[in-house]
Length: 263
Image (tube, rainbow, N blue to C red; front, side, top):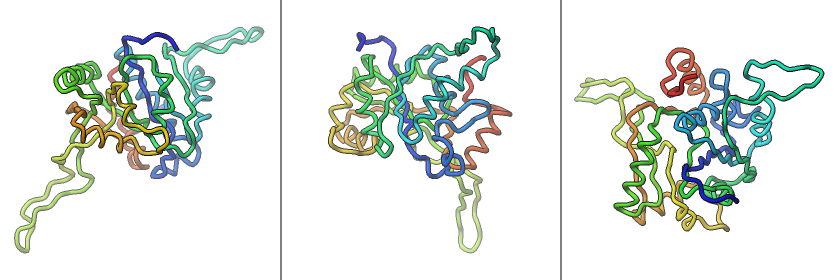
């Protein structure tokens, strides 16, 4: 393993089955579901790459060979290129990304997937996110917030939180009539949307012999008062179900708020 890098590596959870989107995940892993002409995983990586963070660690599981195949063979062919057919040569992708493909098991939960890629992490601290959500998060501001919280409170993890919008219209009742009705209002509570910054001390909370969700790990960190947060007020949307798939693709065509890169 090479010496520590000043820029954080990015771990992306890519191994789950995505059962709530089975219309698509019967055929492919969730991170490869298309959002426009590229998979949602590419969109997530482009956000980090916009801030010159170009080393990724993908925790592969369900149909993981399809993700490897995409980056090795399919993605380079999405661009325009020419070749001499007498000396065919695979085109080079535009993105200057280094990707570690880590086999973490078909059924592993996220905490185990993370610890299985521990040896691939070359940076002093690192970042982790889920392979199914896009956002216009200010990554430098997130890292700055983490460093401040680490210095002040000794945090080992900082999560990004946002206030989601309700999927339902909210009514307030007054006797036999409706006093007020709000169509899909923003909720008061915050949720973790990924885009986390972690110190390597996080591995002190993950036991090799247990297979748990990473959210269980974060709960332990929170109980130790070592979990910080960064409030994201901008756009975030996960691809949880088929309606999310349709909505995000419509946004991509009309107004992709998460597309902060230029090309």
